[in-house]
Image 1: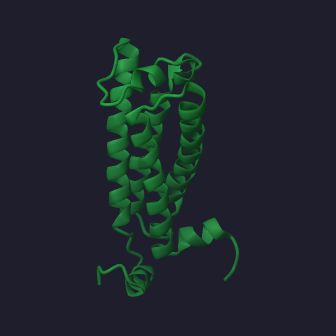
Image 2: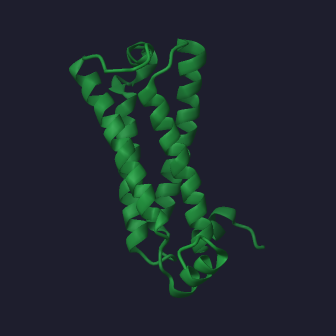
Length: 166
């Protein structure tokens, strides 16, 4: 049954089992947490990051790299920690328990919007690129896409997101 077909989502809806995609989302959260923790620890220690492209330290040293004196990557850490914990909650909860699922959806949505904004600043204002920042942006987009797939498979969250009858 684990072939990704419609029959899997029908079975999941009948028995109320959460999609295994929540574990993948949690793994993405852990990965994002590792990336942003690395950036935050370097920002707090005032050290440069190891980077295979030349723009990382330009981006991370720019005025855009902090909000109220807090490294933007620290907000990324919080984002990925919430995604990870919410995804674990979603995986361990019945599919009609939307608490963790909504937290992941809201956090991923904010993360995608923040990443679009920051990546735009990175490329068009700072005119440099940071491989870690781009990795974080890609991770949060993959979280959002995977979330949509999981929500569609399970049903109740998808119905809450759509908020309109078929």
